[in-house]
Image 1: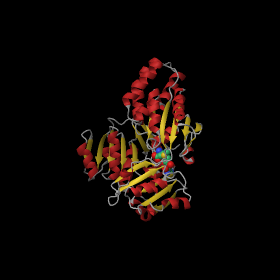
Image 2: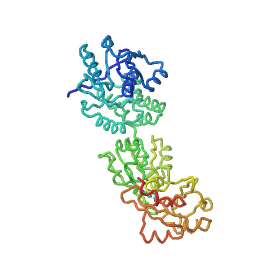
Image 3: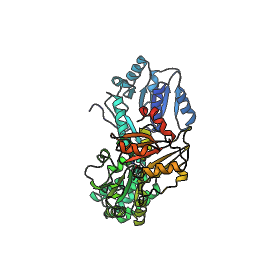
Image 4: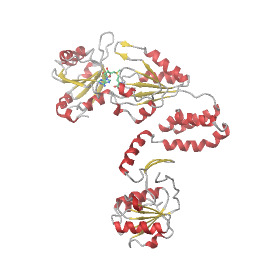
Length: 462
Ligand SMILES: C[S@@+](CC[C@H](N)C(=O)[O-])C[C@H]1O[C@@H](n2cnc3c(N)ncnc32)[C@H](O)[C@@H]1O
């Protein structure tokens, strides 16, 4: 190890920054954020630095425009040189080293006695990434990956732990019991409440857990939208909960690639659904969810698209609420959004459609029972989920209620996935064409003049 990562306390320390451009500004901002008293040496300073000085009365900044002199090192604890002048950078490095002051010369590791890491700031939690000065780009790439894994409000969780530390100490014996308690808090519902911004609820639950002492953990349910199939469309929160679950209950619309991202050792339960061929009845799924949670499990209910759009997530949430089981719902990209963007059909457009309606074409007793007059309006886009079975009725009724027979229709199969297929037709011919081309579920119908844009925009889609 060439460099030892340490975290230094800079409040009330004296730091010297040489330079007045963009790079100097970034270093200055970090030092100021850490509470340092900064002397800045530069013949001129850029606008952001001027703004920083003007807008932040907390900044303790001594601006020297006469140029650098080694006497400026007196009393300094840390020095950063960020100039384009190599001779000046070398002089600053040498002067600091002679006085045993830690010095960093930006982008010049050989002149540094310390280097700045790439940082992830979830204060009070901070993560520093270093590559020993070999590749700042690599450090930044790694930072991007870690950023995605750490919830935005992670720092608030550390704050909560600090607030309750003494109470937990008093309530639970030192050793494995206390350790298990904190693990449960950091991985369980309390942490989820913090990450969702429900601080008061999190504190209430934490207090209840402290009162319970070392008894068993409570389970919870995550109703997670997995999106239309492309794993890149998962949200950070969805991915995090997928990695945490003890058991996953999923249906037919969840793609294999997405399922592969669920924690490896989580149990898997398929409750697949196809129109008119429900594998496990909804009431049984509801029961399964709360029963497993009551056994103390973290249950992931993974659903295609968005749980609250034709996904029966509402019914599941109602049942969990009635049973007093903690749960959270994570939105997913619904099939309409995924299909629209991946095949270049905007759902609204100033020239063609001022509104968009999502409807289900699911047959009830062999009939599609929809509000046809409101659906058969021009200047709107109609998106029909589960519409293949009732396509004949849908196209006939839309024409009968006034939509022109040549209104364009797109049928999109397995949108956003490698097997995506798009069929373009119109209300008159779509039934035949769907038959000819053997389009199968899951497929989505987009009906309206925006469909005509597909030809032009398809190449740019994705
Ligand atoms: C029970 S609904 C679930 C909708 C889901 N909750 C959502 O927000 O996308 C199932 C229907 O959604 C549509 N669908 C879902 N994923 C799709 C995809 N990747 N491509 C095309 N249609 C899809 C199909 O119409 C399918 O029959």
